Amino acid sequence: MTDPTDNPHESTGSRSADNVLNSQQAAAWNGYEGRYWADHQDRYDGLNDGANIPLLDAAAIAPTDRVLDIGCGNGHTTRLAAGRAAYALGIDLSAPMLERARASAVAGSVDNVDFVQADAQAYDFEKAAFDIAISRFGIMFFADPVEGFDNIARALRPGGRLAFVCPQDFDRMDQSTVFAAIGEHVRLPDLSQSTGPSPLAFADPDNTRRVLADAGFDNVAIEGIEQPQYWGEDADDAAGFLFGFGPLRHWLREAHADSLAEQRARQAAVDTFRTYQDDSGVRLIGRYWLVTAVHP
Ligand SMILES: C[S@@+](CC[C@H](N)C(=O)[O-])C[C@H]1O[C@@H](n2cnc3c(N)ncnc32)[C@H](O)[C@@H]1O
Image (cartoon, rainbow, N blue to C red; front, side, top):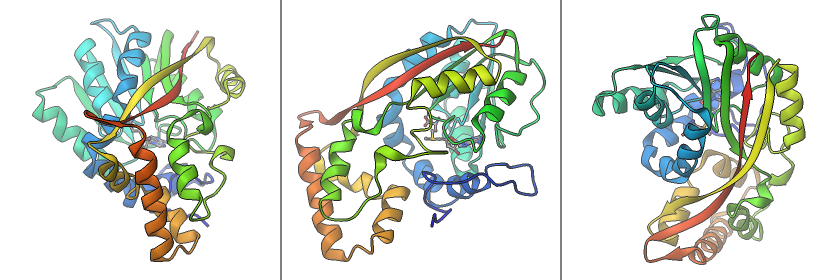
């Protein structure tokens, strides 16, 4: 069973009273996992910032454009998009992450952004109000992906563009070696087999093409990119960060891992992270799909 407060990696869609279709996702991103992301804003940006330039360049934002950032989280890409555009709106389910997003925009004197807490699959966007929709890892969690992208298409003007990044197969990410080492000591689920809303929802490009076509997008292009993920200053630091992840905590609990097993698993993670460590810290390679499409 999924504990909704820490694990957004396995969920089914269910509608809550306030037009949040993805209520389990909302519980996770407003619970432990969302708070961990908010409390570790710089750490998560260290993991994911490598995708920013490929994403924003592919979005080809013009100074007069209005940009929508789906699943914006702590809002780094929203602020960067706002720097290239006339206006950017970040939408996300997570109250703690949006609090960080708003505070960071104020601290950075970025005043052409707004943030809204809502489910992007269901939110009543103003029709055709945006030129471009972007997302850095924020579009993989829709209970009904076609409905989600259809709703995003509604927000785009005719000819408006979509650009997002999402993870490739788990086995193609360096971090799978760390999870394999942990899995020697505690039983983990088969992370290469996630189905439904999860980071791997768009790991299969054929599925992505189908979903986007069904949601009415055309000119779909999918390109593989590789970017370094900064995990920490050394292997201990990287493992400490990883062992706070909500899904890993959830799986350790589900495996009934005792403290000795958890200690061994953590040491295995440290040893594996050390193989990626140099004088400047621990860097692993993340392999992503960069997806672009046009709303006709
Ligand atoms: C993996 S995080 C990425 C956050 C941010 N884009 C980044 O790169 O740091 C996924 C984000 O998508 C948001 N999210 C998931 N499902 C959503 C939905 N249906 N509507 C809006 N936001 C959603 C989560 O709250 C979370 O902030």
